Length: 583
Image (cartoon, rainbow, N blue to C red):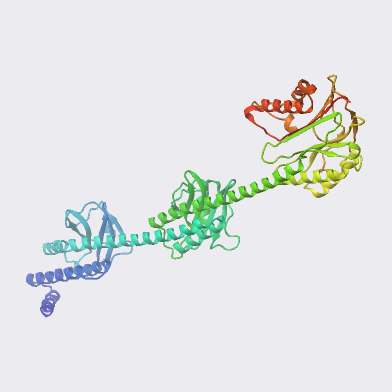
């Protein structure tokens, strides 16, 4: 509605200026028009950046300057360049300047920031005693100086602009906060979704694949790698965005001491870790930790857009790392639990095998008393004994100790048991054990073997023909107190294809006592670490030999239990006793 009048005044003023004159009335009218334009622009619906740029152009046009800048405050004396025209190439984009309480025509020489920008006048825009912006202007056209009229115009301009600029800053801050909240909401939803998938997965490799894929999609990263902490250091568990052979399998040793918080690689202290990560083009390092224990590292590459990682990204990465570590630990515990259940099933099978191998009883032997007992230190033992009836009322006596524990030992024990049940009495003891050795050598692992004492008892002749294949030599306590050890035999069975064995014959007269044991008896240790030993075995037999085979066996086991006391067992123990009674 006033546009024609405004143009008439502006045209008249321009004409006077070309003639070198500026009538005060026209000049005041022009300034009022500029203030009106400025106020209209500041209150428009343009973006904050466009508003500030247009406002700067209005001021520069009114004062006829070719260089101008508008710096907006960021707090604590810091100002950021938001609009500019005609600034030199080296003009600073940010300023840290002392207080500028009023219009200044000569910038502080101790602060060369304005001079570097080519500005000769600085006008503060203040609101409630606080400087919220700085308007800087270069020299006027034609070298004309700034006068009191220009100073009054600028002060009026600063008063008009203060509230809109502050409102704009508040609006921008609200927009920034809203954007940040939107990002947070999106990240929380993403974390919720990924959290459900992670907790549903009980496979460590699947967890690692899901996490690396999620990170690359969330950050639009060029690459991602997950390293897990192993006993020998950090080892690669999963990699994305690498060519064949590009991802390194291990990281430097001190990578495990980066602390619990996510960090930008550029902020790491100089050293081998930073060099290695920068060489692999990683930009973000996210530790996976539980308390003070490092569980691994999640490494994120540069973004495809080359944009850096902000604080929200670090928060998201830290939350994802905690979920990842919890999921990996859950998957690991699940794997351990499955292994334990499988081991328990194997132990149950082995225990069942072992229980079927031990004899449930044997026929009475005229003139002899036989007792035997086997006790496992753990759920499944490696000891074995047997009493096998032979033709002519003879008996085969066996005590053995199989190497190893668990199902493999039980399977080998079953092989020994089946072979002896089938072959006992079909050949002399030496030939029989040689055949058993060849069978074990051909059908068991090279590290498996068995120590075995085999004897055939003839009650009618009161004789015992035996072979000792690497076993603890049995104790033969004579009725008159003498002690003999049955050592004749050879090496253990199953380690060598051919073994040289020999046998001997011993008589069992009334009052004699034979005790065969496994090394779990002689090597039973006290709380101080001392072994039970042969001397204590002999002493226990001496005290109870006259009471019979069963009493002597019970006394020997009681002596071992008293010796180990709170230390408990360290190995299986088996005892087989044969007592010779009257004719």
